[in-house]
Length: 367
Image (tube, rainbow, N blue to C red):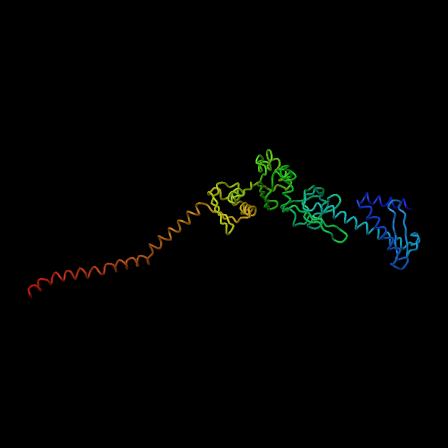
């Protein structure tokens, strides 16, 4: 019996990876519960198992009792308690194992579907890929292998719920760490990530070694490294942006592939006003505003885009407004009025002078 108990403990330890001490304590607790049922009391009962020999020592109020005398019902109770303790230990082991993997990359296989959610087999456990964490338009089939980001691990009763994601921005960081050695060893730092899952993403990088080109290293020879990440994300486009501590340069880099940006920064409102050549506007804005939206999210700056034609149009409108004011009927009337008023004093002056000249001879005769 003693040797058999040790073999059972060893088998559970090997199969479930549960610490032997946890198993021994579980068995002791189960035997105490069985003894309480048999003896009708919960006081003064002590049961210990020798870890080396497997022998069981049971006492009640200082008197030894034979564990074999606890009866069939007590034995069933002990079995149930042992199974419960094993399940609890399994849950704890699983929880601590995947708690370490939380916020990290894992590889899993599509197992089955539960409504809109996908159940992923991670080997020792199953994870849930909810619909909100799935890339829009991406299809899944049983046995498909996926790289996923562990977003949450928590206990729910006797189970452990593991939630994984395909849309989390940090999934991109983890994939770059996997594919680009310079990122994993810290030579290249991923400063920021902006992502619209399944469509497009921008990743800002900088190098801590002046000899290493951060953008080139992330792209790889003939684009091999970035292609691997794009393929894993089902064709999602990824722009590698060189980070700069000068906001103007950083915003210009983030707006690429558009070139020739002239940027004015409004520090108070944290907004960048960008002027671009007419032929670069579409590239800067992107389809449905995607490029400028991602650039703004990446840099943390509001971005307002305009072309030189817009500025010229504004100046022309101002000039037209001035000219319109000058040529309006009200303005003409006012001008005419002012001209008339300025001429009125001159006429009496001339008449007075003529009268003076005409009356002078008469005055001389009278005199």
